[in-house]
Amino acid sequence: MTYLVGTLVLEIKAGAPNNGRGEDNVGKVKATRVGNRVFPYVSAQAVRRWWRDSLPPGEARSPVIRSGKGAKQQAHTQGRGDLYLDDDLFGYMVAIEKKSFNRDTVLAVGTAVSVAPRQVTHDFGTMSRGFEVGADPVIHEHEHYTGDLACPVLLDLARLGTFQLEGQGNRPDLNPDAAKEARENGAEEIDFRFGQALRLPLAERRRRAAVLWRTLAELRGGAKQALHYGERSPALVILAPVKGGNNPFTRLLRHDLGETVVALDVLRAEMRAWEDELDGPVRIGWAPGYLDRQRDAAERELKDLVDSGQVVFDHPRVVLRQLAAELEGGDLDSWFEDRS
Image 1 (cartoon, rainbow, N blue to C red):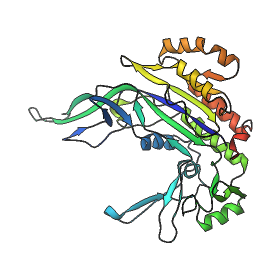
Image 2 (cartoon, helix red, strand yellow):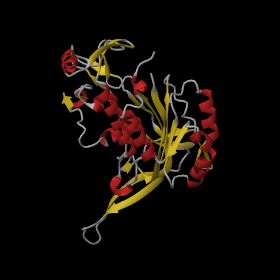
Image 3 (spheres, one colour):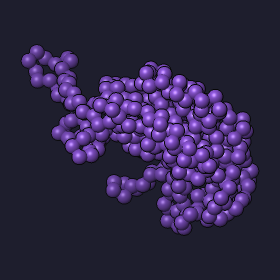
Image 4 (spheres, rainbow, N blue to C red):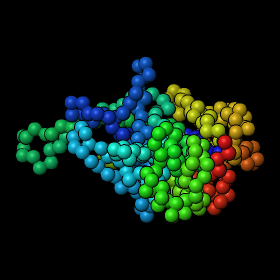
């Protein structure tokens, strides 16, 4: 089996892309503390929401179903990974009496945390347009920050388009009616990890993987866009195919006096340590204009790895779209097979 693993970096400039619970009429950004240092973050749920919302307009989304009221209300998608790419990749849980089923996520996403501690800025504004002379303005306050957020990701390619009939626990991925319809639509029954499973045709699995990475190349989203709009496509992407599912590329980023540093020595050390598990080149998408001097140095320092085919180095959009084309074109079909 092959997992695509790595790290994304989102460059936030005077932004408030993911907010926490407000306090005393102040909009608060999400942040965590380590000792007396503050690290702003974007929740994994928010990153996944942006990714899902950025899917191409022609890609059907699984309908959301709500039931109940107040504290007892429930909401879930249709739970049809065979029909909908987002249910397949992002997972679901449908808890209906005597009909419960769920799908663990195929695309795992971590919290996007600032690489360096940051001072969160408290912003102050008023609304007074159209008020009579001398009237008190309406006051509003909120927070924003500038920082580079690092987010680990993992895609289990063998599970993409493959649905457990027995489930890892006591719930299958699909209800019986959905499984029957999937068979009629061309899904084949296979023996897979925890028992019997249904697998979609390879062409559809290729397509879904390609759509996912093309979408990341054009990621959009975030809160406070009227006041703090910013580009949300990754400034830096590091991805590698790894056979066993470990992610050794989560420790490549550190900071020096508040500036993000991409540790190329750590990259080389991890590539050596995991050489027997790597199933292809490490793909580095680094946007021009982001950490420019480091980018120029990286192109020089990694030239031997690029020349030997061990590293691919280009713009994030170019790297991600090239990966998508190889997946969809059938060049990487072995990645979809479970070899455990």
